[in-house]
Image 1: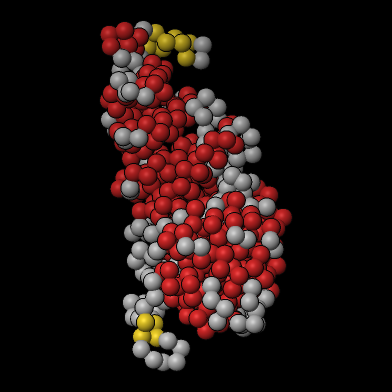
Image 2: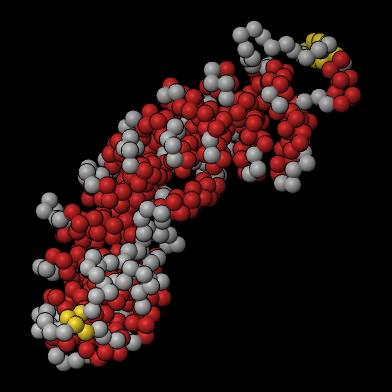
Length: 522
C-alpha cells in the first residue's frame, strides 16, 4: 500500500523499499479504526453468563430449604473437606461470578478463591467440580488485565491445557473458553498460552463431529492466538492454524466465518512472508467470495484480510484480482455502511499502488465510477482512501490510464474539491495527485489546458486559500503548484504577453487556451 511522495514518482511502487515504514503506518491507522468497530460486534474476552435465574437462592443438595451464602461462607464451604459442601461453595462462587451485571470479581480474588479453583481444576475424579471451577476462572479471566493476570500467575494455564483432552466435552469446551479469555488479554498472555502447547490441543479437537457451539469457541480462541503485536505471535507456531482456518471459510455459520476471517486478518497484517503463508492455503478465493455476503460481521474481517493481502507483492495482489476481487470491491464501494466503503476504497488504493497491468484491471472493472461517487458523497474517511486511489494511479499509471481518469471518468472535479477537506493529510494526497497530473501535462504539452481546467473547477481559488493553511507542508505545496504552473498578478499577465520559446521558436500567448471541442485533453 506504499503511498507516493510528492518528489518521487518511483516511491509509489510496492516493490520499492523506501516507503515501507509509511506503508505500515497507514495500515496501522486503518487497523486501529477497524478494531474500534470490531469491539461493537465481538469481544476479545467473553464472560460465560448462566442462563438460569442467577438471583435465585441455591438449594441444599438434599432438596431442603433454600440458602444464600455470603462470600465468607462460600470460601469456607470451598475449603471444607466435605465434597458436597465443596461443590456447593464452588457453584455458589461461580454463580456470583456469572452475574450479568457487576460480578464481584475483585472481591472473590481478595478472598483467595483463585488458587482453590485451580486446585479443583486438577480433581479429575470429580468432573462436575472441575467444570464449576473452570467456569468461575473463565469469568475471572474475562475481566481486567490485573484480574486475568491473577489467573495466569496462579499457574492455571497448564491445567486448562490438560483439560483440552478431557473426555467430558463441556469441560474441554470451558477450558477453551478460559484460554480464549487469557490469550485475548494481550501479547504476553497470548504467548504464555501458545508456549504451553495450546495449538496441539485445539487442533485435536476439530473434526467433522465437533459440536457447533464448541467449534465457535475454538475458532474464537484461534483468532485471539493470532491477534496482537509488539510482539506478533510466534509465526512458526500459529502458521499451523492456517490450513484449518482456510478450511473453516467454507463454514455456513456466521460466528465461525467471522472469527476465521478475523484470525486471517491478523496474520496478514504483517510482512509479505506471512501474507504468502495465507495465500498458500488457497484462502484468497474463499475470502473474496465472502465479500458478497449480506452480513457485515463477515464482510468487515474478510475485506480487512483482502486489503492486507494487496499490500503485499504484485504477485499476491494478482491472486486477489484473479479471484474476482475487483467486481466485489466495486459493489462494496456502494455499501450502506461507511466503514465498509472506506475499507473497500483503501483496498483499491493498494491495488492502484501496484503495476500498470493491475491499474488497468481496476479501470476495466469500472471501479473509478464508484471511486468518483465516494469522492463526491462518501464519508470523509472513505474520501481520503478514494483520493489515495486516484493519486496512486497518477503516480504509477500510464499516460493513457491517467488521461482516462480525467476524460472518461471526470474525476478531476470531485478530486479537486477535497482541497477543502479539514484533514491536512487528505489535502496533501490531493496536492500530490495534482503535481503528478501537472508533471504529465508538461510532458504531453497540455499544461495550459490543465491549468484552465483546474481554475474553472475552482482549484486555483482553493490552492490560493491553502497558502494560508496552518499546516506547513500543505501551504508549501500549494505555493509550489501556483508558482510553477499558474501565472498570477501583473507580472503573470506581462509574462503571458511576452514571447515564449517553444521548440526553439518564439511564440506569443495573447490569451489563455480555449477548451477543445469534445472536452479537455492533454
